Image (cartoon, rainbow, N blue to C red; front, top):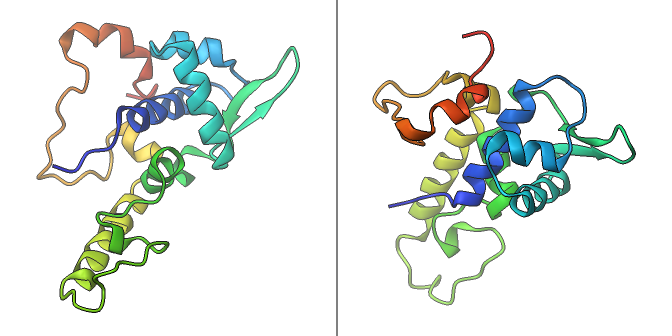
Length: 162
């Protein structure tokens, strides 16, 4: 089964928290507390998201982190790329890898097409879509991510207009 790491899940959670809030900068400590993540994890993820240009940081007493662009301009593929690196199902589907079996392989181009399709699908879904549960395929019903026990602690992450 293909899975993103927990760090990417947590990074998306941080971005959704920033998207739900006002445009005021938020400290890493505040973000960690409001998402339930540990402060070191939140700080590490915020640095990765800043390097990727998804958040910006401001220093000073009124400093903190804000989204670098609107939530509808941040794609799922950009989030995954920021935390995990470029999405590629196999080494041959990555642009920076030369496979030693390429000269005899009959399936490499198929994996490249599959990876490109997955990237295109992820690029079509924005952070705003994810946090509002929009544009998700009907054949993929949503299941609670965190279980009933954690629903209340994450209620603040739901979009405000619902």
